[in-house]
Image (tube, one colour):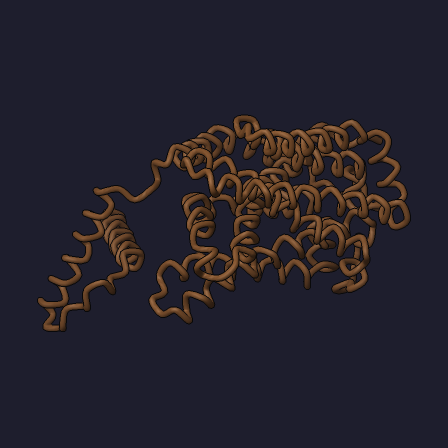
Length: 394
């Protein structure tokens, strides 16, 4: 029996969320990888500044997609959520640790004043940018090779440490480096930085070649570890595989020709087509070779609720993200003169409050606008809560 239409729509939405996470958060991870490989402070100063300028406005929003994917998996396919979270608890925990440490490192390296703390924060950001995609890739490799049973009794070490899973993890890292470098080429071109265009172009080509080699190795491994998936990838899903290969080659040619107009489209299509090919090749199984889409889906009412949420997200969330990326791509999120005036006003207010309380004024150059913003937002939130409580009591 075929899965219901609502199950197919929900599964397609989940695959779309995975593709969005790979394209947007994957580019952020790629920026961290190139930050790690940029060299010492002197040699890597300019590339790291370019990476910061590209990643800072959007890195928090890009991780919305993994939250979206986990919630859909939990509510629409609870049997799969239970099996994956149990059997792959260790790599999933390590990837989550990488995501958290990456955010901590990225945020604190802009606020740290001591050189040692700046270096530690930079290492956390860069190292975790490798850690998170690698372990996420091992999880995908474990599911694709059928190593995750529907009713696991605990973490299954062999599921995510097999050669196929490890190579899939490495492939995730190289793809993140590839898509990150492709995006940075476009950003550097927009900022009129020809030196950085050449710098990231060479790295995009290198990462693309490495990704192609790892993908070929993975196909060879899949022939033995997951024969059904291999035959589907070379059969029904072959057109999507061809699209991915051609788009990847087109992106490399565009880099060589220094045509960055369609570069992001080609690079993004290469990554998205791989995910679509994997999803189509694995169909109709959620957990091959035993749990199908029909067996692992939630009741129809739940799936219809998920589809309704998809519609609301398309109306409310998609335009907000589109506007955010437009602001970032048009450099409208950079600090301006008004931004500096606002920060100075906050600093003056802090000094006035300290003097009024009889405390010594803070040393110049040691103000923390991020902390001040958090305090202001928290105070405003408390004021709103108090007003609501008074209104309810009245």
